[in-house]
Each structure stands twice: as structure tokens, then as C-alpha cells.
Image (cartoon, rainbow, N blue to C red; front, top):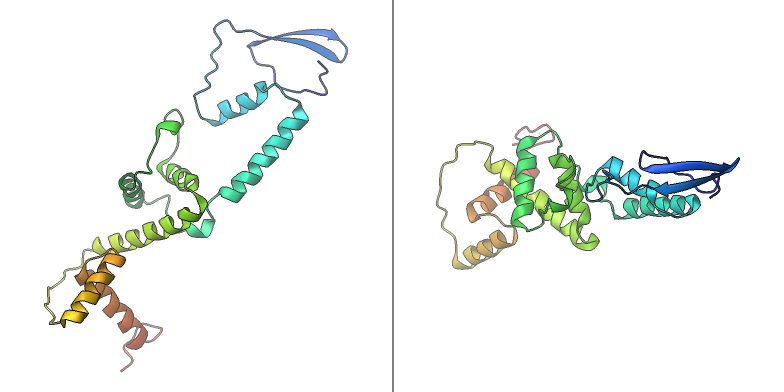
Length: 206
């Protein structure tokens, strides 16, 4: 095997014999090697590539193709900018959200050290591309609602008389937006108040 054509690092599991100035004889020693294929970490990934018995040029082509595929399939940064790697409350909520959606599967990563934030991104990246955007947007809205519920504001209950038609529409909207009717009324009133009653500095205009 010509060393300049096929280059891989030599580990302790290789037996190497130089048979010519530019050639080497390599044998894989299989007696009790500690190589673990099922361990998904950086070192194992590199080692898998190192022992892959194809031409070094083909390895490089394959790696470049993997990089391009990763860039293509990776969730766009602006879609996940709302996720905060330093917010343990949000990360815990996100994991529970993925579990309820039956997307939280850690089995493939049980052998690797992966942060909760990275694991969330990995799971989102694994979703089918067209469905992923819809799911992340729905997830983001749910987190916004959760933050509002956790804001600790003391709320007084009011009962507003509504027509039957208006009540029906309110009920349908609450189902579509995945929030209670009271919460929906509160959100709509606050949005209208901000757009109509206050200026850019938050001061009442009238």
C-alpha cells in the first residue's frame, strides 16, 4: 500500500511493517481491541473515518458532501434564536414539549456527552424539513404563552357579556391559538392597546 495515496493515523491496534521506502504493510490486530462502534462522540467519529478502507481522496469527497448536506439540513439560526442555551427553565420546558410531541428520543445519544441545548437542536434538525418550520413556530408560540403565564401577574377575574355569535368565534379562535378564552381576550386587548393607545415610548397618547 502506497503511503502517499492512503493516509490514516496508526493506532496501537495496527501492526505496521515498512517493506519499501514508500510502502508499508499494515495488519489489523483484532485480539481484544477497545474500539467501540456504538459510542457517538467526536473521537469515535474521527476513528471511524480513519479505519474506513477507501482512498483518502474519496474520504475527503465524502466528508465535503456530509458538510454540504449538514448545512442544507441544519435549522436556520433565525428559527431557533429564541432558544437560550443559558436558560435552564426554558430548556426544561423545551424538553418536556418535545416529549409530549413524541420527538424526544435520546437513545442514539446515550453514549455521548451532549448538553440539553445541543440535544434539543439535534432533535429539531432531525425533523422533516417542511414540517420542522411549522413545528418550531408552534413551539415558539407555546413558549411565549408559557412565559406570560409564569410572569406572576396577579389577575382579577371579569365576566364580559358576549353575544352567542361572538362567544362561538372566541371559542374557535382559542382552539386555533391553543390558549384559553380569557388569555386570548387578554392578548387581543393588549395588542390593540399597544397599537392604538400608546406611543413608541410606551406613553398613553390621549
